[in-house]
Length: 348
Image (tube, rainbow, N blue to C red):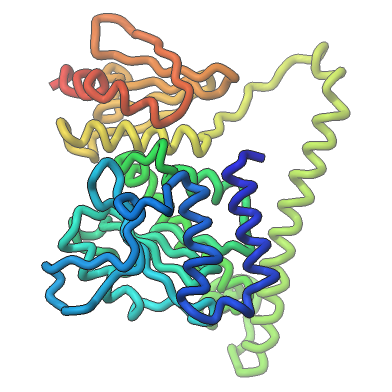
């Protein structure tokens, strides 16, 4: 576990054991927000980097402030508004962030009550804060995926384009997961009617609705449990058959598009949209590499990502021949932005 993950876990434990003492905004700032910013590498004692009670004359509301503004490379990039831990975060709490976002160079806004963190940007309209967050995490439910997304906001690796490249995917993924979870716990009448249509032929009375809702809820959970059991069984079977498979004919490996490949594609797409329409950038996965193409045409390669190995590298096509270069992280793709754009342009 990295020092960053250890710091976030420590903050989470503090929230679990001392949440009753965080009934005010100031308590949330001191116990959670400042340690969180420190874990991300920001100097909380430098008022030029972490600006408390930030004000901007252009907002037009005298005395209105945002709790914190974070400066990166001399520009306001992140705005933070805090609420007591007892407050349920709602759209109405975005008012100050909404106004400040439009008059500063901020690209991200965070609304938190110390337990839940909502991250916002301007995916819908430029310089206008979205009403819905693109990323939400709860300190009581941390995992490696959340830590990976949070690390993108670290001071040392902060890159606006890199975060925005995956923000849209995160927004829709989190929204759909929330809807699925709600359907599991409380299936809507419309959903129950749809899933029961092929198995229940009677009238949809109040009694039938109650019965089928319970059955749907149970079936939903069983589907998930069956999927988990299947994966565990397959994993155990694979372990037991390792020796046998050495001497037996190998089946064709399944092509699996990984999160890394999707994120790499989004980064290349963000780079190329400066020179070609984003809709022309396509991804086509293969066994040994994942190709990013112009017009989904194999004769128009822009980048090939070779991520299915310990040593990762990408292939560039701005010259007459394929040029393979090592990459230590996805962010390093941005270092080859000019060459990637040149490859996209050379096909016309």
